[in-house]
Image (cartoon, rainbow over all chains, first blue to last red; front, side, top):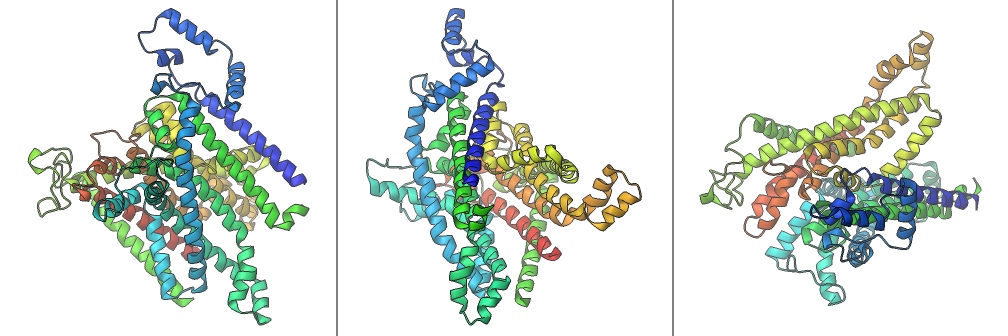
Length: 315
Length: 269
């Protein structure tokens, strides 16, 4: 209980810090934000009215509190790249679905493919199969996901014509086509992470198998398979979960690049476009969003640890 | 077990071979390229690999081999600069926090933990959106972003080594803290520092490629591997070789360095 409370306090403290940092970081941008928003030919009155309306004359803490209040209500202002016509929150919610689908599909692929491969590689240690898996993972770990995305487009889009590059179908239009298109970016994001995960899982399992309790179990006559599935896997769970949490944060970063290659209208492309267009309200909101997601994932992982490992509960 | 060691050694040699080859190509590229990498030739647009243009030409008729040689050079210089900033600041920070401990150590390590949990490309994007795109900005941004990972590695080594007998001896002999940290402890952490320098270099290459691919790093007409990939993408249909050349260059670089780093780690185990 104490552990959970402590973690909750850390969670809120981190979220608070993240919001302060995200807010202040964008205050140091040189230039007048009123001038940026209204353009060079705005009159002095218009600028004054703008500053008044958005509270730019207040001091920093007041502005932070106002910003946070709005942010908590989901109000991040209007997007300047759309001539202040579209709400930042609407933009983000629109794009979020795609990124979440992409991240979810890749995560699923990573778990489903890498765990059996890692176990296989550890079980058949030093066999030809293990060497082969090790070599392939080593190569795939070196491929940047966006280059992989291009190769997939080239092979499956242009040569084999399994999908039409750039022809993305929205989710609510046709779910089957949406999924058929999405699977390729998901593979591109997943493959390097699968390779990392297999390598990690293999070494985690091998390390665990050298411990005394494994020898004891063996001397009591347990078969290797039973030792692996009943004891070793459970004990290797903690490092694996830590690693998966890291992968989850990495996936979010991977989607930024891969969305660009596949021309997917997701959060990552919105972020890059907003940076290029100096649309700071959108950049700020997306950064705050992703940072919060990473913090919350880490918090959940801490809770999961405590659930799996009773030793943490007593301490 | 025996087979495994042989295997590891083979990987190490393979890594050395790949890296030597790549470094040679890049080094030659600094002094000589078959063609002027920025010279356009309208008659030779998107021509496939041939004897005159070994890797073909791009949409402006520029020789891709020459551009890969120069572009890899740009990418490498940026990556080395990033690692220099990250590793030197990280080592100093890690050395001081590990050696002295205390509340400053506590605070810095908490900040470190938070920063490490964020993907570096995301942090780099924040920097770029604040300070604008360009090679110098991404060197600065990624250099700073790489500090925590080095600091963490160096710190944990310092914590272990400072309790060892030879350090106690040095203290008894009257060596000051500065001398102990940088003359006695630092040389002993090279077994972890060298692999992390190599991995850091790889991460820097990948980050540069990613940012330049997004158009936020190296600006045209300068070639870099990421920049070339982003230009190549529109011509995937007509000239796939354009994308493959810089992509393979990135893969070989990262593969070579990670094989070497794995080899060094095994060597010390």
